[in-house]
Image 1 (cartoon, helix red, strand yellow):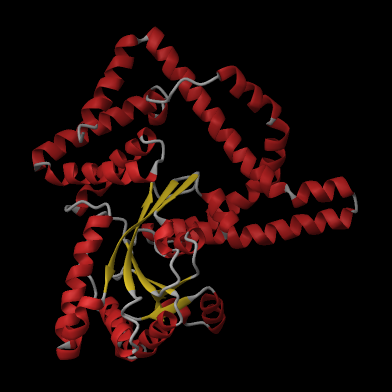
Image 2: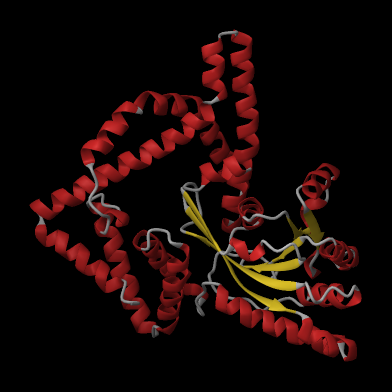
Length: 410
């Protein structure tokens, strides 16, 4: 899965993973914008094994139950699944307590559902219930914490950028007496405090209808901070607060400016990241691109069909936008393994060592072909941007001025 996600994402940055280096049990609470993918990226890129609650309806088939259980998934049910299914949550919470008793990490999405909008939803009380029952019924409160995780995708799709930030933690010790006297009040207060902690460590806007606008600004921010995780989160908070504070008319005007900017980029085939990119050695880059052409062609020829098939299946099966990246990356991973084994089998059958080695290492060539195409695209975009500054200086200055006006969150 690590290989699949490293291919799927263009760049991955993780901040604060050292906060989880302790060997104590903890509940991770995270934002939830890409369905199963959120849990997968945390499982792969954090340093400790992770267990997590997943919507129970996907466990119906015995084969699915077996596979998902092996992947550390624990089914949890909502009222939409019916009263009979809801009664199964007792065993789910018992399983969560067992995980924590054994000093593991348990991931819970306390908002309860996945969605693309970048707002905050009220927390479900199940997270606080599992935490308090585990801590005080088994006496491990001195070691037990709630940890926050912020997951950020530059966009939802293939070759996007991913930033994971482990934020602040919350100790459960102060809830002990209250839990003994009134479990209901303790659960309500912990839920409130978790929400306050979560609010400080997740990027969000107060108006869900402004999600696309704020995500466009965050993508612009990604290109400026050069993927330094801490800088991105600090400035990202400023962006979200700026967008949330806009009046309705200011939001409409800013949206129009953003739309105009994106149209100009499209018209002149310019990419946002080249506008503020530093000068680079074009001769060296062109030389690298020329030398790596054969390897890139091999990777593309052997693996592009796999990509097209994965995308076609995802396009035909996904009915919810927030599921798309999860399904696409999952299908790509499973089919990628099958495809690679098929290529290795062909190489073994041909019995020519060079061909077998070539097919065995073909995933590396395919990854190289992705980088090759991205660097070539960036090279052309940079050249067009440079040419625009010389041939149409008024357009060049109009684009830079408009971009500066749009990113007025500083």
